[in-house]
Length: 626
Image (cartoon, rainbow, N blue to C red; front, side, top):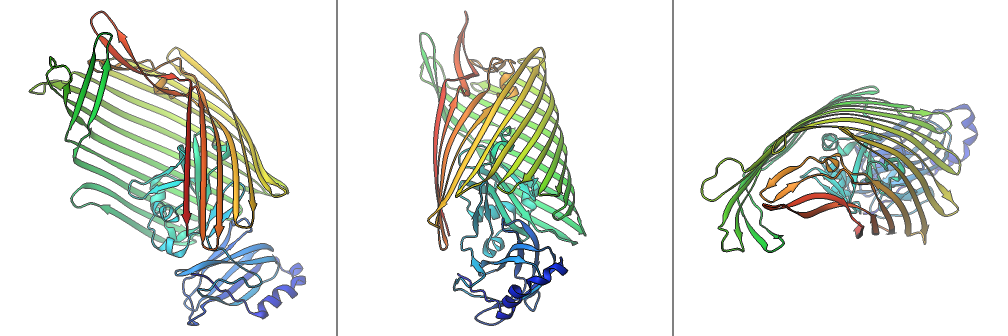
């Protein structure tokens, strides 16, 4: 469908001729009526949103039962007025040099798209910026969505995969996807509780730059949501299967009063499958022989029950400040992550054997998250974010191997762990005329204690601290948009008596160019340092089976990922096509390494990690959005 928007000659004349009155009024009002062009009927509850030229939110409202809307307290400047309604394409009215109050009178919507004087229709609802895409959801996409996950799935953003059932968002090229709501980092529960009708736009940053360089973040999604001034809303989203042990149930409460919002969310995720199994084949090569095991899966139960409880408070003054505090508690109980096999050997002298692996894990993760953003004069802003977390976990693993009747476990161990962590970050933004400067500092500190019992009885104490400093410039030079940044970090690890210190440097360059009015091309290059995990560095030895042992490697070194990517977008009328080509080169990557350890009485296969030579990976992703 297409749009036809009409503004009366009187409104346009008033807008052009009365500019001199702007000296006497600094508070501007916009009003009008949204009408169906064919039936001449008023369109009730049409969304009317006032945006800045960069599509950042300024003000918003809905039309009443007579199709009328009004936006007040508008400062002089350049704006875009977005008008949308279910069954009609979103249209944008350009308001250049707005300096007085204006009555737009009747705004007609219909199926034919036309370009009339001050009216610009954005068919695809996607706007490319130097560092992000701005996506304006259509009414059809909003109405067919019940959560943030479903909205992302309906937007069909190239390079992203949103799963509304598993509540996951993944990047095609790998890496993490960070989701934010009004610039505040959002949890799975908050994304699930998000009401799509309140979403003004979605910002997609597929080149996050050096700000997220220490988190392996490959993409950032930022939901810009309109602020409700008063009222209470309750949202329930229940997903349950009648014949399968499956449930994703959400209960969300929001109470708004003036600038404040109080929130309470509860999310339950339950799985209870009776018949899970897998088949596999293993080969073990010894000095004088080779053992092949054909492992035929036997049905075993699998299940977990997760609870997420969040209480939040938000205080927002648009264009001035945002304060947000969230207390979360995530409780997970996975009593049976089991696998069982009937094992047949290639050696006739080795009879078939039954095996069963039982694994169970419980954890409790309370945390508190504080965020503050302050808009300063002269297009400056600062933001602070602190997160404190406690993780308590209990993991048990037992392996049974028997011929006829199951007896006690052949190998068993358990790990009781507790982790305390603190993360603090400060970000400064400054907009100059030709470019924007972003700089920041991030510090993290954690302490972990793991108590191992069973085949190994030991206690490990792990200390970790990290300091990350970064800065980047983004702007426009002639027809080329650019983003140039660099980050420097110092990470320290200490395990009992062993200490490790790593220094890393991360540059990032992005260049983009629009041509032929239909095409957009971007090239980016980045170097991302990747550090070994604490578990990979630990040299605790754990017996898994008769001939399998797991152990870490204290000699692991950090490695680097060199990424080159090209993104091309073609946009014509209502069709948008994209093509992304990514090539990654890893220098000395950390990968699993298996070797045989021979002794006088037997040979054992040791599963550990080593820095390998190189790893190359390429990925191509394409898509068409209408």
